[in-house]
Image (cartoon, rainbow, N blue to C red):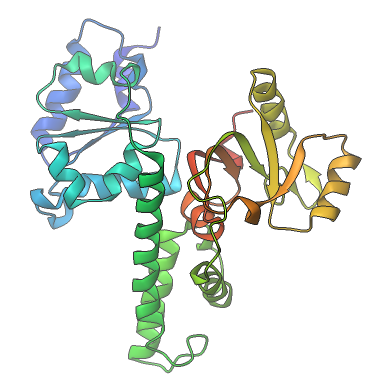
Length: 311
């Protein structure tokens, strides 16, 4: 069995009070039960005052949300004092976070055993359609703010030096923070991406809840025609466990079907655009979750990046 000290080293505690951090670690160390369930977990105080935030800003929700953009499978425990109904009114991102199976919310006070066994507790029931709408509204609001900065320059690709260039740079930086996939892209790519996701895609499957695992093709199951065998093995295992597997793409269906045939892969292939508005059980993609939702208008109850599939 791994020593408690080693497990505690893997637990990150984000709280503005060092005394609370010390007390949590001490309680974990002195607890009489196995703390292995907390390995590689991040524990966050909702009423955080780090970096000048006020307690009533509930910045712990924003911290967790930002973490999940980059690591959608990260185990996070949020703890709070303020009633959950008030938290929901003040920060709409809370329900987006709580819809994830790897997130738990604990109301103070509670014994340390509750925190240790948090992931054995049933997660809070969140309506999938409400969560999808909240996520879309959040993304739309952020994109509106980004365009507000960028469009102050008549020619964003070649802004005048001075305040125009500064505003474009500010908008580009916000876009990279919201959509991590843009981090290594040039300004021309980012501006085109923002234009595309700002366009209206009719949500023809709006309100539909679809079971199964929906896996992207280009950059996910295949990269430059090279098969991701780890991911394929994962799909086979899920199929053996009774899950329905659907492959989808925004690319050329005929060309990609030929690629599947050449590799003896028989899963059905669909166009992503035909699922706009749907809520799916699980989606696998090479994009980050924000970029996926913004471009496809599809919401995934569980989202996993291809590179996070275990070997």
